[in-house]
Amino acid sequence: MFVNGCLWVLRSRAHWKDLPERYGKWKMVHRRFNRWCHAGVWEKVFETLTADRNNQYLMLDSTIVRTHQQAASGKGGSKIRRWGVLEVV
Image (tube, rainbow, N blue to C red; front, side, top):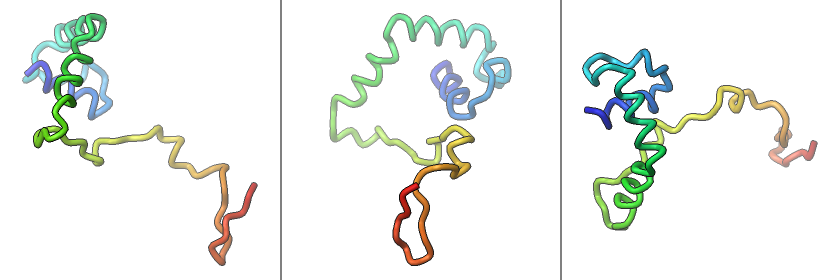
């Protein structure tokens, strides 16, 4: 339940205070998450999961990958002309 609570906060980008009660008290989950971060537990977990390249249960779902909201504004960078040639700005 603790790991699921951490994943819920990270996926939803919500504040720890908004953690649903089914995962436990938000302060306890947050405190344990911080302890695991400082102790390097998360790195060990992910190293173990990625050690076996044939791991069928390890998957990255692109629906949970998010960017900063300003990244979607499209300002700056190259612009595409009508005939499909990139225009250098």
